[in-house]
Image 1: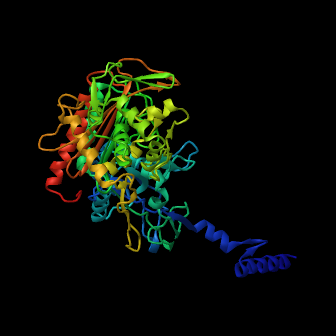
Image 2 (image 1 turned 60 degrees about the vertical axis):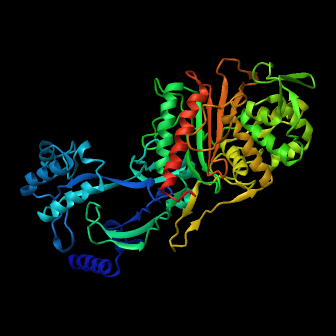
Image 3 (image 1 turned 180 degrees about the vertical axis):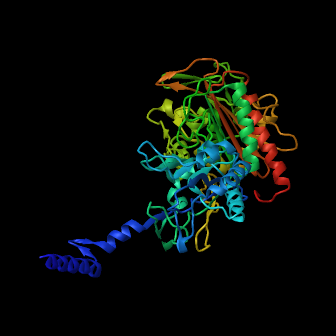
Length: 593
């Protein structure tokens, strides 16, 4: 019986060793699952640059220190990969030198310890000082450890997204968010829950992850030098924007200064190349820091957070800057007699009396050119009445009532109210019509560019793996008016800053050494159907095109309900400053021309 049992067990043992199975379980597969591992190789998210190659948003990897204390941590050819007791003091010196980890902490962490269950602790970290380390710090530590042949100190990687400029075209660039696993560890960076370019071009930026296999030790840790890459990671593509860092920084500084002084509900500002439609600088207030997200959450003493990109997501009544388009349509359609005069002050439209901005007092008889400079509502209504349905067709030609196809998230089309003669009349001076900043910039480009209307562009190119970059050149989206019309409107707009009798921007929006065409705006605000009547319950604005004879730049600024100071003077601190700086930059740089 003993011999029989021995033969049975021996036969069974030989079968298991030879065949490698116990019942339905495959021992080789079990062994592989224990000692072979696999993981994802993360693709690098593409960098967002300004027009000159300076990074605006880029991938960053932070590192955290840890030590392997178990003497079972053995690599290939029986190489010992754990911390040796003889190296404790040297490790403490190195970590203190490069990462400011206190020596006492390092020595304490490296001492043998057991957890509550009595099991030896083999994996230890080094507090807050041992986390969020830069690649440079990691490299310095690794170099010195290698020189001194010290083992057992390693690093964990943590993906992150860096925005080195802080508040910098934040709503246009947007932000990408860390995606965490169930343990709270960051595993990737995604723009799906963000905004701006980071969200709109998330698929372009994020790339494709790879995959690798490797051998593991008894604790499941990867054994260095054993990895086999099955699929290489495909890094995301880089995006070059049209933003000029020099001009954007000047704009951000000016916006911040005016925000502190005037305390408006919000502001927007955009500088655009008149010939190409390229946006060189764009911002809004309130804003936020995409690195820290400060400004997107409630803070005591801070403005209420804004989650909308006001340039495209928040249609508003533009007020008198719309008169630029009314004048252009009247001239282009042959409905303007330059010598004709009208009586300013007030006008009856159906059952409604509409006043000029000084309470209906007016400024006596004037020409329509003077009406544009003085910003007469009555003059614009008379031109609209001369044009009839033609005015509505020009609003369509200038792109109002539809998006600019910016590809940015949540762009709104605005709307044109034309259900009654009163509404139609009001559209001629910028009320009863809702527009976006991008729509206005697009329309203004036709006036500044010989009648050719340019789509607002914020991208220059997207890099590709095969080095055949996708280039975004200027895009003409229509010619709403003739070249002669556009030039005449530019000439009329000079009066806004030059005509001391009728100009509403004289002494405010002038720029030394430049001929400037401008138009001011002051729009009433309706909130839930009610007209706000406070002394500063307006949206103030200005558009400037310079130089008049051949505009290079269009500057457009809006300010809603400032609480302190004179709104036009405050706006000029932004628009004049940025325009003047643009021409200084342009003097030594042909990039924008």
